[in-house]
Length: 530
Image (cartoon, rainbow, N blue to C red; front, side, top):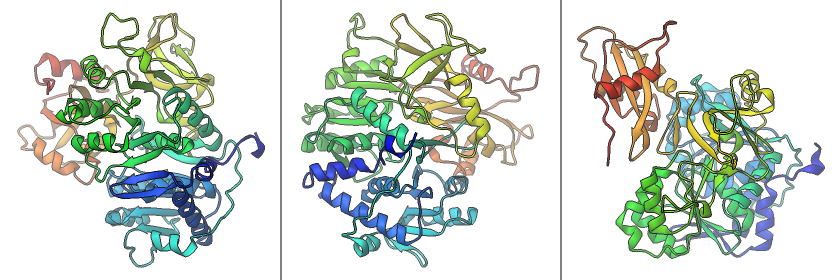
């Protein structure tokens, strides 16, 4: 495809700013920025970064909590024709350093209180040429707001792009341990935005309002693109810690109509007494993804909020575009034909789903196999990882690694995971990443981390450890302390058990299925009910 067949995704912001210049674009506490404000600030930073030497194709690493500048940074990267490389702000300095080095980022944009992350990135990469600070910069760094002011009023041209030009490195881990950068392109993301608008929040316009309860670096950032495309304002929370009371207060104050979240957050919000103290009748779409939702939690949410739930299933490599279960496919009554209990929905518009066996052949209806999909939402591959790309896209399908079945109507049911990955609080946790850190502890001989069911978080990590020496005093408290600074906190196991040996296959491989079974049979693990 050539440039005539795709637009620079940054045009979405420009179009909205032209249509609704004075309407609110972003709200944070008492501060409000209009679409004209955001558009002008983005233009100023595009001019500033071009002057500093950034060119089309360069990667911009961004490490920040949700704020005005993080919201702007993707549009800056898009217009430059650069690649946006956002990180989860909860990652440790070594973890962010790996992302900076593996992406080949030439510029780093960061929030001032993450200076140790900057030092780690610069130590790991020799190609970082410019560092821009949100806040007070250190020597040799640029001040974000000073750059905006210096170039305010500039109207630089957006880069001309082609369909396959990358615009976002969406980092997603795998069973090999190290995160991989899924390459999202301008052409692919144009389809994704249109698809999400059609399937997740149909009818959204400039009179709507969204609220961001998760970091804009991942799924919530995708959702923000949709609202920008339609001119709907986004409300940011004043803190990274979710306060249900404040959340419902903001929903009432700003007449919030849509949000993206995960089942554990839905549960937290609808179980809090504040849900009954504030008017949330404006809410039309509460989108949840990232993990299955317990039926009891689904019922309570429907009881408290009405028919506003929207579920979707998808991975970062397809930007969530595999299935959707819209509001009219949810119901409180188990006997209601609209309940669709256990299903994650129907295929997304423009996407095809297949359940394939190990020979990549379709299986009969109702038979379990690997969930695969194809269509315009599928990414272009992993950055600098041709073997992983070939494996993920073999046979003309994107292979999810999840197991499931289709019914006669084409609705999808997920039955398990091919990999050991588990989902805790909506975050994908890959055990090998944690295991590799724990195995460097002097007192650990072997370790297996598995995901076990949990009422609050969906799943939690449980570590089963074999000590190097029998009677060694190494404890769970010591191992947790060891993880601190080496591994993001959301990846930490919630429970530790110490066994004399781990079950193994005939080839000497630890069999995690047997680890889970023994945890339950021995009575070691007990699911939390609160």
